[in-house]
Structures are given as structure tokens and as C-alpha cells.
Image 1 (cartoon, helix red, strand yellow):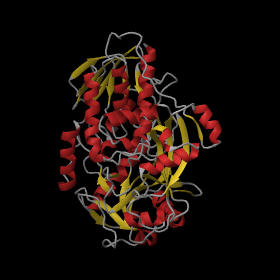
Image 2 (cartoon, rainbow, N blue to C red; image 1 turned 45 degrees about the vertical axis):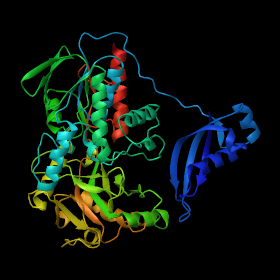
Image 3 (cartoon, rainbow, N blue to C red; image 1 turned 180 degrees about the vertical axis):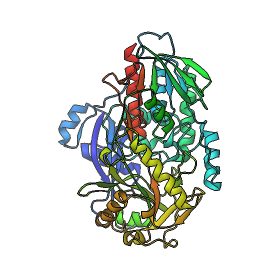
Image 4 (cartoon, helix red, strand yellow; image 1 turned 90 degrees about the vertical axis):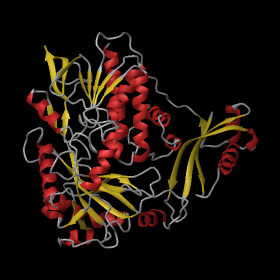
Amino acid sequence: MIRIREISLPPEHNISQLSYEAAQALRISVSKIRRLTIVRRSVDARKKPDVKIVYTVDVAVDGNENKILKQSGCKRAGIAADKYYKVPKAAKDPARRPVVVGFGPAGMFASLVLALAGLRPVVLERGEDAATRHEKVQKFWKTGELDPKSNVQFGEGGAGTFSDGKLNTGVNNPRIGWILEQFVKAGAREDILFDAKPHVGTDVLLTVVQNLRRRIISLGGEVRFNAQVTGVLQQDGAVTGLEINGNETLWCDKVIFAVGHSARDTFRYLQEIGLPLEAKPFAMGVRIEHPQQEIDGAQYGRYNPVLPPADYKLVKHLDEETVYTFCMCPGGFVVAAASEENAVVTNGMSYADRDGENANAALLVTLNPKDFPSEDPLAGMYWQQEIEAKAFAAGGGNYHAPAQRVGDFLVGKPSKGPGSVQPTYLPGVTWCELGDVLPEKITGALKKALPLLDGNLKGFANPDAVLTAPETRSSSPVRIVRDESRQSAGLRGLYPAGEGAGYAGGIMSAAIDGMQSAEALIESL
């Protein structure tokens, strides 16, 4: 296969134009191309409003590939040489089946690797299956009735199920292509295989995670819902079993611990039994909403219905803090993401078509352990809880979220209602002064950064843009310390993995980390 990079076409192009440009690059006729596969597709808006769609493609051709390459003289073309991931096989069957705790991205892909290796994992998920969970989440958003056991944070697929389902990552890893292929096999659209910024969408993810579970079961795995790990049994510094729901024992000696960033009761328990934990940097802030068409105009120079809804990624380094956007959801919604009673948490979500009226993103301030209220390894977690409780009170005690218009926020004036931008958060917002909810460490940095970020994206500091608080669960504030073998530094046989353990920051990086922990477990056999 010959790979050709940087084929640039107008947004209104068709597939025949792509084949023509590939043939032109190789100086051959289109009839010589037997097959064309899109490897990568991205939007180039550097010369707005002249926006282009840029492709990398692989082509199978009639004739000798090396000879065609030499004759073409095309510096953008070469022989395709991808690295493909291969699931390792276990050298032997263990006496006891491995256990995976948590069925978010890390636990799910760790389980899939173990199942493909022939090890028949047992998965323990504290929440419910995706279909049941979806019903309870929808009820919470409509009525404010929270189920602490089944919500946006806990259940099949983890917190990522109720998000935009973004699968892009800054990590360069051969497992990425394989993960994307598994998502497609489970029902995701094929364009995630080549889009530069792939996303699945919450509506599709609900089906995808169920199909991944069914595949794990078909390979001999077992997935148990409403199965919370409440104790870890150990002897001579090694895991011997797990206590489930306080009344059942599962004997095991290999456990991948992928509990997610909101398993606060689990973190407290691990601290009580002396497992090594450490505070780690994380970020907190707000969700910011703008009309999607305004973002499209700012990013593309003009609105073009042929182009996908525009996204953005902004960062501003201040004297002591960094303010940045995260989990940007084009055409999405700000959603209630609480997992504990009497607390308000926000997150962002969008469906596969990203056709909502507003765009939203987390607008976060980096926080380091030196900023935390104490030196307790769980200090960041307790700080999250304090802010979430303040937000609950400020919202009215009914899971409404405190909100403020950007213009009012910048001058410290409580908002009385929306302007031209209507907030999307359900069950609703309470207009107020966010300085009464968030610490000055966060509000001060946001006030400095907003005008500066507006210089990078025109209209970002639109006075009518809506800030909804708080965004506290962007990542885990605690790390379960592990050694070079990926096992807990204090307990052999326990493999902390994923975002909750402090080793990832999104769906893709969590899935990769879960896979690597599964590989380490397999190697230990």
C-alpha cells in the first residue's frame, strides 16, 4: 500500500475527487487505483474562510509500488508502515480467574484483553447496566431524583458513557488503532477510524458499551452489576480475595483495580488499610456555553453547513496557574453529573450528530497538591466535596446548578437571568455570583484568563456566555501508587489502572492504561 499525505480539498468535495487527487500525486491514471482507504481526515481552518478538508490515504495500485513512487517524485507519498497491536496470549491458565473492578474504559478494555487472552475475567461493577442506568440518569435530569448507586459516574461504561465520547488523545500508542476498531465492531461509526478528532456520542455509546460487554461474555468472561467491592482481603502482602457488598467473598489473587475517579468511599477505604496513596495535580472550574454557530463563525471565518460543528482547545499560562479548556462538546449539553447526595457536579455531553444549539467546554484551572487545604493524600478529594456541597446550597438544594453570565462574572455582579445564550443544564440553573461557590484561587484565574482567551478565539468572553459550576471531576485528585510491574506498591496482585487510579485523563488514555495493566497481569503468569 502507498500512503499519500496532505491531500487538500474543499468542504463540498466527493470521493471521486479524492481518488483523482491521489492519482495526480502519483502521476498515474485513476483506473490504476484498485482501492483507496482513508487513514486520516482533518479540518484545516488556518486560512479562514478558505477552509479545507485534509486527507491521508492508503492506495492499492496496479504495478510495482516502489517504481510508481520513484517515478512520481511525490514527497508526500511513501510505503505505508503501520504498527499493529496483537493481544498477548497467556502462557498458562491461572488457578483462579482474574478479577477486574470497575467497568469504565480502563476496566472494559482490560477485561477485553484478558478475555481474548483466554483468561475468562470476572468483572465487578458497582453500578448498573447501561440501559437501566440511562433510565435513572434521565429521571435525575428531569426531576432531580438522584440514585447514588446508578448515575453519570457509576455504571456500565463509566463516566465516559455520558459524555461526547471523544477518542482523541495526545498519546502516541499502537493500541489506539486497535481500540478504535473494537468500538466500530461494537457499533460506533466507521469515521472514528480516520477522523483526527474522533468521537462516538452518548446516544451511540449506550449501545457500544453493551455490545463490548456481550463480547467479553461470549469469550468466557463474567460481568456482575450492583457488585461493589467493600473490602480487600490480603495475606503476606498479597491479595487473596475481595469482599463484595459487605456480605460476599470472591477469592482471587490477580485484580485490576479500575474504580474510576469518583469512587471516594473506595479511596477512603484504601487509605484506612494502609495502601500507598498520594495527592496528584488535577483541575477544577466551570462549564462555559456559547451558541454553536458563533463558534463555527469564529473558527471557520463564516458559517458553512457542510463543515462539522467546530470545536476548540484553548490554554493560557498565567503567573501561577494554567487555565485551559477540556472535553469540549460541539452542539452539546451541560449535564448534571453528581454521584453523591446534596452535591452538584457538571459535565459536558453531546450526541453523535452534535446538532444541539450550544457548544460547551470545561474551563479549568490547574491545581497542585501545594494548593490543597491540607497534606492529606485525599485533600484534593475533600476539596472537591466541599465545593460540590456549596454549589448544591447555592443552587437551591434541588440539584439546580449555580450559573452566571460571563459579563457579570468579570465584574463580580450576580446574574439575574440569561441573556442571548440559554443554559442547557438540567434540571435547571440558579443565577448567582460564582465567587460565593468557587474559591478565589479558581475565580481569580478565570477572570484573568477569559479576556486573554478571547484574543485566541473571538467571542469566547461574550458577556452573555454562560458559566455553570462546578466542574470538579475532570480527573482524579489522588493516585494509587504502583511499581514498575504496575502492581500496587503496597499489595502484590493488585493492579491500579485508569483515570481513578491517577494514571489517565480521558476515555482513550484510560483504555490504553487498562490494556497495559492486563498485559502486565498476563506477563506475570
